[in-house]
Amino acid sequence: MEIVTSEFFQRALIGGVLIGITAPLMGLFLVLRRLSMIGDTLSHVAIAGVALGYLIGVYPIAAGLVFAIAASFAIEKLRKAYKTYAELSLAIIMSGGIALASLLFTMGRSFMDVNSYLFGSIYTLDGTDLYTIGAVTLVVLLVVGLQAKELFLLSFDEEAASVSGLPVRFYNVMISVLTALVISVAIKIVGALLVSALLTIPAACSLIIARSFKQSIVAVVVIGELAVIGGLMIAGVWNLAPGGTVVLLLIAILLLLLTFRRSLRLGG
View 1 (cartoon, rainbow, N blue to C red):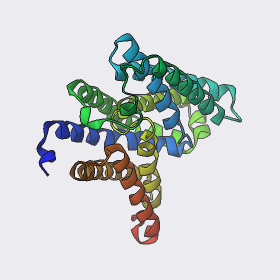
View 2 (cartoon, rainbow, N blue to C red):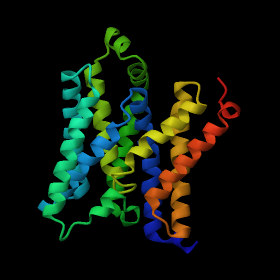
View 3 (cartoon, helix red, strand yellow):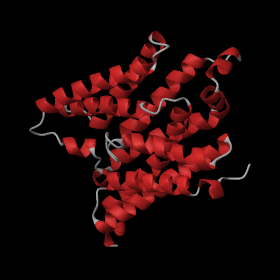
View 4 (cartoon, helix red, strand yellow):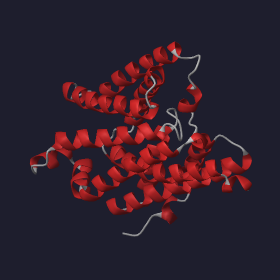
């Protein structure tokens, strides 16, 4: 258990706790709006930005963040162009992100650590990373706290939200941008290939046990934190891959809830 007192592990724990709040929280809104796959799409685009950051000597997470935000605007634009086939926007942007990332990683393979961003490298978080993750967490909590009612209406009935005068396009873009911010800082923690799990599985768990929107918000954060903290502790003690351990623990929690869903259903 000496690893728990190590400075690098404590930094990893802080970063994990922050992402354990924001990723499941944004994931809940994505799942309710049937946009679960946006996590995979933006994470692959962010990886392309990370690769470019390495090539031009820019802070990789910042470059990934810019790419992810640009992709979020592109997704919304394509969703409007293909209203009947909105999922096409995700497929198109993901394909472009993967293609660009593979090209850029090939150009810089002699000095680029691909695996750390594909599978996560939470133990290498530094002060700059923590400040960036903290800033994103603060922004997400402020927006969700101030716009909870609007986000609730948008998530459950977009047409009703539009009829009531809510600027639906603005809120769609806002959710996409916030998701891009979260994914950009999360890829160094759980990796681009696993970040979607941190967005969607806690939401899937909350849908089993929660009976109201407020309960869902509390449930996703609690489940996300249990998985992140528990996964990091297990990975640290038994020398396992942190990102993979967190995701497998999330899946175990989901299976447990599915098994006992009737007895665990929260009260009204």
